[in-house]
Image (tube, rainbow, N blue to C red; front, side, top):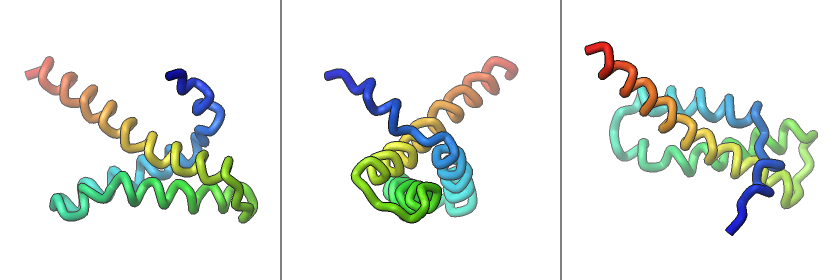
Length: 92
């Protein structure tokens, strides 16, 4: 299944904001009760931010762009965390 069309729906501003908010949530509230809902929170935040950026319009494209960007930020966080962990282990 080719998912390359999704790259057209990524909004870098939304990804960046969601990445920062998710990082703060993950490090300020370290309990699993909140951590397990971070993808849901980022998806909802991504939609809200994308609606705001697009002038308070709500279309399926804006919904997909917000959801995809918010959820992409959680994957990006995991990528950064793995890179940082590998970099820290090499120096030890």
